[in-house]
Length: 115
Image (tube, rainbow, N blue to C red; front, side, top):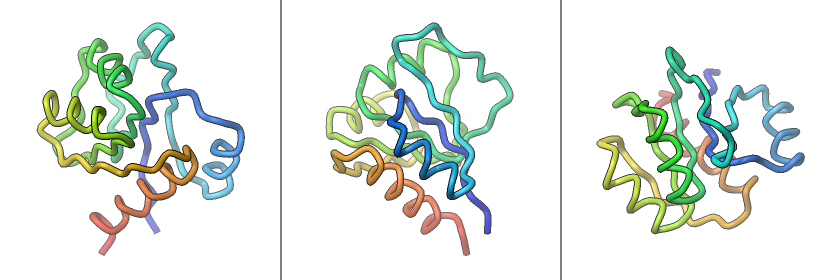
């Protein structure tokens, strides 16, 4: 079964790291407070944003999500920022727990993409 390549716009907890490792899901985790990462040539299937600041940090890299990539936002202000800047399909998943948000995002991607 195909699994998505995730862009995760924040530093994650150890339990989330472990769960992703156990599921063999590839991801790149970005610390929005660190210098911009070089993401040239990397095509993500799903972008997980936890705050409007995470979206701003991604935008400052000069990159934009590929049109087929899904954007997952865990609060309404984050979703509003995503709708303002991106043309991608944006899902608001109001899940306060980090691991649950990651799990639900992957499940939503699978529902949209795996036939």
